[in-house]
Image (cartoon, rainbow, N blue to C red; front, top):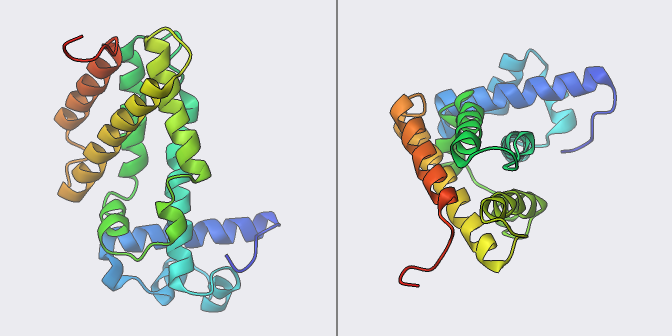
Length: 201
């Protein structure tokens, strides 16, 4: 961003711009995404938009960051401790799908069409560290131990399974299909229920 909004009114303006940008990307794709369209839908002048975002790439980065923040908000709500694997998987999958459903076409555009920054692909970003730590903690909880290297590998598997199913469902327009949700819950809960012993051990 060109500058950080400090007053409530400025924060509301930025929020309107980011939400409008997400809507236009979702509905019209990268080809239909312009700062003029975003400003018009947000109800602000193009000059106001450029106060915060120097170009549409910086706006796309802000939309991506908002999506990652939404995903972190989901994982911060639920801890595995005290929940059965099915209860945990149900809460997590349900809310993660909801976070992707506000603008169902957005994720296809972000994944397949819009240019991305290197920060978004950084496997050692703050987002990736917190996100994978969360899944490692959940795996270790059901294996009744402190997280270890095997649990961190398992965290990659279960997080990639959730992200992959949800992102591909978004691509196919199937996010609201209850069967997708049910089967993903079943997959995650069965995986978490497994004690993690190697095959053939």
